Amino acid sequence: MLTDLSELFDECSLEQVNHLLEQDIALKIDEKTSARIKSSVLRKAGIKKNRVWHYYSKNMLGVSVVACLIFVITMIGSYNYYQMPVAYVDVDINPSIEVGVNRWDRVVSVKGYNSEGKDILKVKPILNKELKEAIKDIVETAKLQGFLSEKDEGAIALTSVTDDTNKAQDLIEICKDAIEHYAMEEKINLEIVTAHVALQKRELAEEIGITAGKLQLIYKLQVLDDQVTIEDYKSYTVKEIVNQINSLKKDNGPDNTKEDKEDKAGKTEKKEQKQIVKINTDQQIKDQEKSEAKNKSEIKLERQEEGAKKENSQKDDKDNSQKKDSNNKQDSREKKVESNLDIKKNSNINNSYNNKKDNKENNKGNNRNERTR
Image (cartoon, rainbow, N blue to C red; front, side, top):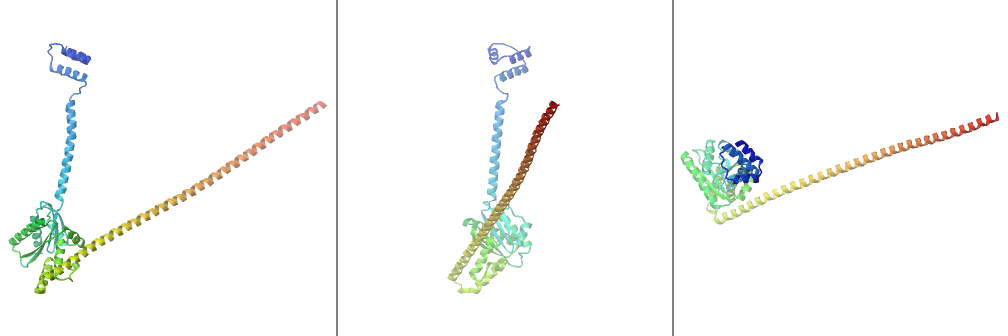
């Protein structure tokens, strides 16, 4: 009976079901039948089961996807921000190494400017290390490879490359403290030469093939001797350049006044500016040559395309002319055949007419003969 009742609800309309539900009918039914009746009523009302949950799930899926995308984009942006160098520290002994650091003084880029520097970076990777630890590793590896020793006094040039003066000073202090601490532990006698240069000099040094620190050291030498050239001293060790600077200072003695130094420094500055201008000019010439070569290549390609188009056009004209001649010959043959057919047809018509005429005359002659008889 209960099954019949649920079937009855299925057959009733929504109005009829509503009317029945409004009546005070006391029936004891099990959960299964109650669920069937409820399902029937919801179906008739046009309400899909779990519609609210599906709507929620669908929208939550979209929200989750957007949230994931925002998270990924944020992480990529943060990673790029972390990996961006804001300053550089050049470490020159004989190995020449450039270390790029981020805002948190973590090493995010390294470059060896000579074979010795590249070898050290292979032996002792320093990426993602703190600057202090990275500098200690470089000096330690340089000692193990024989560039520094307890017996002889060594020299290290530390150069901060940044446009931020405060940052430059902080970097020098971190690196100098790390080297002095290591030298004290290993009982190495080291002369540490420090300097700070702007980022523009890094570009110039990179064009020459040396660190900005070594370039700055050679400039100091040029202040004392204007005959010195970068090309001559770019392969020298820091110790050799420092010894040359000390030697020239002794030779110049008290005659080397402040005015003389300022004059030489001014000349060195002018020479540096000329080198920068020369490099920029050379780059402009290279760019112009590339542009001209590209234009020539494009013009040559255009001419080749025009030649190919012209050749194809001539070939098409020739093909069309040959086709036209062929069609004309075909038309001529067809007309000749038609003409021959017309002549033959006319000839046949004339022959037929003559034959008929001859037959008629023959018949007339025969009739006369019969009459005569």
